[in-house]
Length: 202
Image (tube, rainbow, N blue to C red; front, side):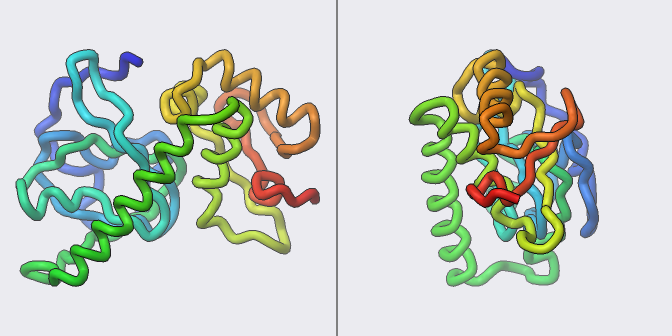
């Protein structure tokens, strides 16, 4: 699918210290200088510049590290954007160089995350969409008052799950109508409850 402009932005990341990134905000752009970040909460989309614009390349969720390539190359390889509201903190900013054990742990987590992302692009449409929502709600507190996930743009969901926008829209509506997913709001303000994503009826 064609994405946004592939021209690199030389500006640094959206933040230079721990803080909240609003849903849809760019955290940093490919080829910009900066440092690594740990995702304290939320979901981040990673895109790689290509001949037709930015192409979906991966995701990061609570506990993951993004931008670690800057430790080797000094610049970001990917463009990172918040799929949901995120809280980030600098990773290893107080260390001259991360330990080998720390880097190995991060590599193992990255490989596991890539396998999970690839699984989002196979199977029936309903399975792909539900798995994406499970992926994104994994860090939300469940139980007591229902936790809600603000849905990304249909275009984002479509590119991540390798479906058409029309199929994604139809699938979410179907899951909501049949009662297996609690969907509220309309258009850009739609939410699903974490309980229903994991198959728990309220």
